[in-house]
Image 1: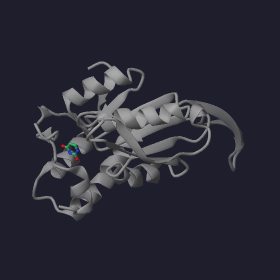
Image 2: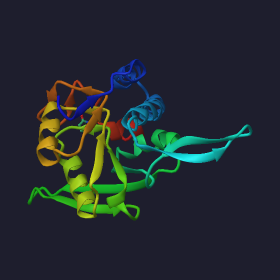
Image 3: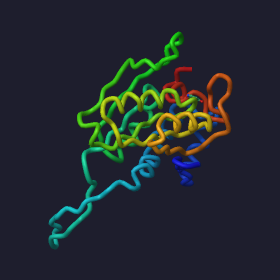
Amino acid sequence: MDGVTVINHPLVQHKLTIMRKAETSTAGFRRLLREISTLLCYEVTRDLELTMETIQTPMQEMQAPVLEGKKLVFASILRAGNGLLEGMLELVPSARVSHVGVYRDHETLEAVEYFFKAPEGLSERLIIVVDPMLATGNSAIAAIDKLKERGATRLRFLCLLAAPEGIRNFQEAHPDVPVYTASIDSHLNEQGYIVPGLGDAGDRMYGTK
Ligand code: URA
């Protein structure tokens, strides 16, 4: 699928399978989510640009590569996106973090922003927007709308699971934003859950159901 990278690293796929199992505990799910998010972060940052810097080793001076540009931003779509942050920040401790909360108004069907916080200089940073599930795509679309309204231009979207319907909607709204996922599942059911999926990601990571 154009614009979608499926991260099929064996460790990612193995951990995802355990996360999908209904019998996996909240503690187990959370631990796996932290581990898998580190691996996903490694893949989504694989092609970041480097620049050369002069450093002094104990032996001699050399030109050595460092990440180019301003610090990355990880933008979490509340609340389940927060589950991906911990593992990603372990890998990129200097990343800045944005939180975006949106809900759908049942009457107008508009996406309403209830929380937004982001670092300065969004227009100059690469922003990796995270949410474990790309289901209908509505919250991802709305969150990215909000980031673009504040100047974001370079974005990627990272999730664990995606539904084909969600990918279609998302790409229609934001064709410039590449999607990274560990799996494209079969479909969405009538309640908007990804099938076979893993259930409600927020409930599974926080034990709220
Ligand atoms: N959100 C979830 O947490 N799970 C789904 O299957 C769909 C949306």
